[in-house]
Length: 102
Image (cartoon, helix red, strand yellow):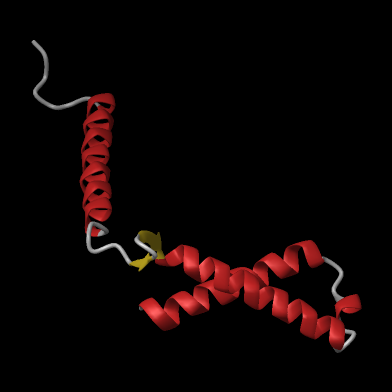
């Protein structure tokens, strides 16, 4: 007769199954938590997402920062400008999101 105790392999399998179920429950709860009003703007009859406007603002502010650094002659000090300017744009986009939508 087979013993009533679970083997190590069976216990590991059931633990993995329970962990997978818990992950599915928490992931679905996390995804459903975002189902609230979408931050959009009605511009000329078309709805634009707020993040898109923040992205445009970030790009414009990064371009203004570039012009300021060129005027101060500090742009020559930036070695990795291909990384720095997108990071500046992302910074301004995130800050504008926090200021207007948090």
